[in-house]
Image 1 (cartoon, rainbow, N blue to C red):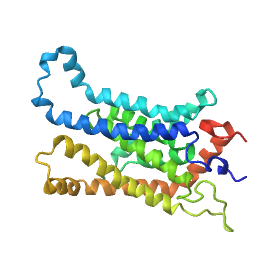
Image 2: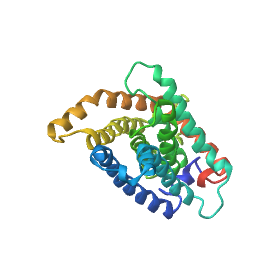
Image 3: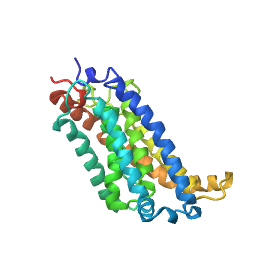
Image 4: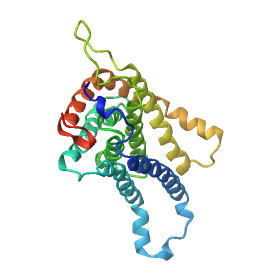
Length: 279
């Protein structure tokens, strides 16, 4: 059986993880929208009468929501192990790939291009290699951890959601065959493999989509009045950042997407990580 074939024949490892991912995604959208509206109107709310504790919770609401989202995103990953107990080796890919996201985001900060970071590409590779559940958790964890370097704030929960969704979608699309045989290709007569064109296109669109969703955080929470002109101005001002992000993501996937995926699929299969089968 070709390498990785047995782990690409179903979208989610377990039905519970699928339902959890859908429920958490919907709940996260509601929480994020409500949080942004709260941040917009918090100055007009009389919170002092509720005491010091409410004031402290309000001042740290971004971190509280970020931790809450992180706990939620663990659930789809947890249901992967419905039939067996999770082991340390199952957590290693998420921890390693999230750390790689943090390191990549920090390393690429020296490049004088706006938002030219490889984080989305690494999360996509995680999603297609270890499944949408791992991609979801890795994306959320990467946003939370990397902002200890780049600064926590009201944007953190939105970044966690965006990157988590990128990992989730990458895993789903790979398993339904949209990206073809990425990571499972055989070499041609001259010893080369085809470049993952469809995966690169997806990566570019993820860079654009990430920026569009992050614009919602800004529009809902800070723009007043909210109309066609202010919305157009917000999206126009972020266009260069979004294109730069998309180009970086596509480039990373072009050069290392297939190679990394092939090696990670082999590791997953050999050690039975996150639902993979030992070979």
